[in-house]
Each structure stands twice: as C-alpha cells, then as structure tokens.
Image (cartoon, one colour):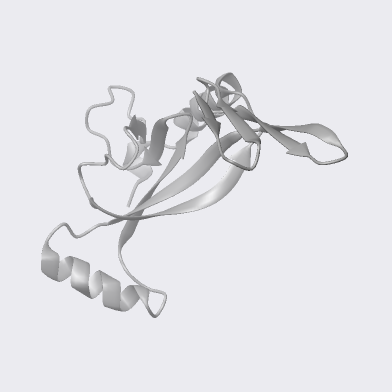
Length: 138
C-alpha cells in the first residue's frame, strides 16, 4: 500500500507490517528510513458490565483497577490467561487486535516499533508458551 502527502513524503506499507519512508529534502535529495513493525498494547476492562467499567475508570485515575492487556504485533494480539481450549495447558493465546471477547475493550497504548521479523516474534512466543501455563494464571 502506498501513501503520499503534499510534502513529498512517500510511505510504502509492506505486508509484514514494516515499511519504508521516503522523504525529499530540498538541497539533499531523497532520504530513506526503514519503518519497523508497530507494537501496541491493548487494554481491556476485566468487568464487562457498565457499573464495573465505571468503577474501573474511577480507580484507574488513582493508578488502580482490574485490567487485561494484550500485545499487538504483526496483525495479531497476544495475551495470557486461563485458556480451557488449549490441550497442552498453555495460557498464551492470540486473537484479532482489540478482539479479546472475555473483556471489554478500553484503549490502546502505542509502544513504538520492533526491528524483529515476524518469524523471530513467533519463535519468542513459542518459547513463552512452554513457561506461561494457564494453571499459573490467577
């Protein structure tokens, strides 16, 4: 996907979430910067009902509350919880970004970008799956 603006900046989105930023600087020429995959933390309210969300909002203002979080990278959101559907007892699971059905979505927190490839991220997740078991979730 290609995006341009009227300031002669071109951004090419690659399928893996990375991209390249091309910027023409007067007297310098075209500058090129590699753009890495964005990392976003999605925050959910643990209580799904409205009253629980209001209470969570109040407590959040003073640094407290009951929240769930997932990390989005390369188009998937990764999280940890008590997963009954995993035969190996793993608590690490993925869903669509902002799509954790057990909780109510609240907000996102951009964390920057990673220079890891999608394959490297998946290897790290696989390593974590062995140590992060659903029986350890509390």
